[in-house]
Image (tube, rainbow, N blue to C red):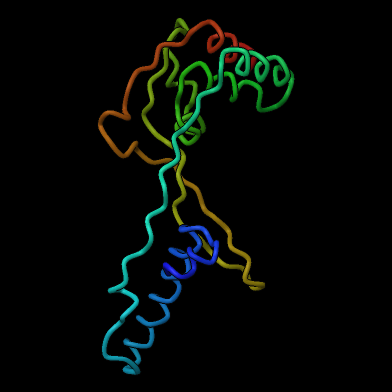
Amino acid sequence: MNEMVARGLSPSTARHARSILRRALNDAMREGLLNRNVAALARPPRAPRREMRALSASEASRLLSVSVDEPAGPLYAMAIATGCRLGELLGLSWDDVAEDGRSLVVRRSLAESGHTLDAKGGRHVTWALAEPKTERSRRTVMLPAVGVEALRHQ
């Protein structure tokens, strides 16, 4: 795997290759073809953590102005207004919004719940609403004017 990274492949590609090899060797062990899975002993390369960069005020303002009439415009506005994750925003319902429209409660998140393969080998993702992973993720978020306006537009 380190050789893969040295040849210019990304650490995530090397990790994915290790995962596939591990699964194949686990199958071989189950069938009695191998005694142990050496891929399970290998340490995957660490993927560097990228620092997220927030939009500047002018970038956020430009995004809001060019997307105001787009179908996803209110979603972008809510993302900017609340800082919520995409899954949290997609998991919101009108019941989560306070009557005065000035706050909302994050109670659930839209998340992958599984995968299926079709006859041609195409992968299909299934989605489901789930509770947030941590207690801190369950929270009340106050909405600034841009968020309130996005909800009204929606």
